[in-house]
Length: 415
Image (cartoon, rainbow, N blue to C red; front, side):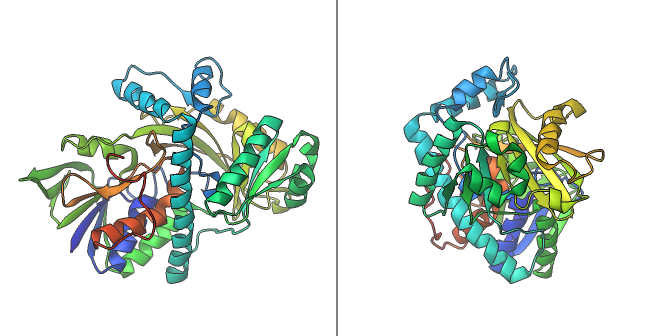
């Protein structure tokens, strides 16, 4: 079959790869000039099944409320005059009960675990390089309350077949010697040895090359205008340059999926959550992190990506604006200097802000849409890089009418 994939981020390109492997004729369309140049460009780089917990939790409403007058919350709610934001926020709050939060986290962990397995398959098949590290990920706690919560997370992860352990402060320093300087502040850490890290932009760029060898065509710099529907079927994709036809169409447009499909009567519960990152050239790797991870109570993710150090933080529910100012990164840089002073050239920052396509359940929609030849693979939120390869395999299985290898609970349209 001829299939058009809308979106050339990590989700779209992994999807194109799996579909092409199945023998389909695939075309990828995106308005960006290069693949993985928007949301997949500057993310944290963490491949983190051990961090697959729903943001919609019993703690989230308090964070959102406090963020209206405090700037130190993991989830910031920037109130807008936007019915779409309010509706999404109400749905998000509905998912914050202990029972719903647990169920959503279970679903996320199942997909994340499967996706890391599929990523390994892609690496074996293509030899794609992307500064991959298999050192596991370290989630460090400075507060006893956070550490106690980490102990509960370890139990939940193990129940879902994800290897995890709780470390004390001595174990943390042993795994990450740079933390010796803050040893007395550390209460413990969750260590997930099966987690990985790597550059999602580099992965996607190189996987796109493998896709081209399989015959995938990329039409970049081409803005998607609409989908043409006739008699309950998509007949064409309309761009600012052409009218493209195919047998099947796949939506992998992240935060923009909702706008493209709304006119077709398809209402995706997606709203953007902005994240920030800053990347520095590494000058002394011995002073940098030996593995990636998160300083949980300071909202700081750190990742050594080859000859670079990336720091990321903040989840801001505030609309589609990707603008930023240098002051937005001050706390991130200060945290990086505290932990890894001398590791990187902190005078040469590369700033980035991007939008995560978040659903209230924090789970992507991977399903056939109400229109038979239109498919959905979108809404991956803060774990798009982690979930991309597994989502692509599930979508390709559905298109081929194969039974996916894992339960799709929480991933269906309308779930």
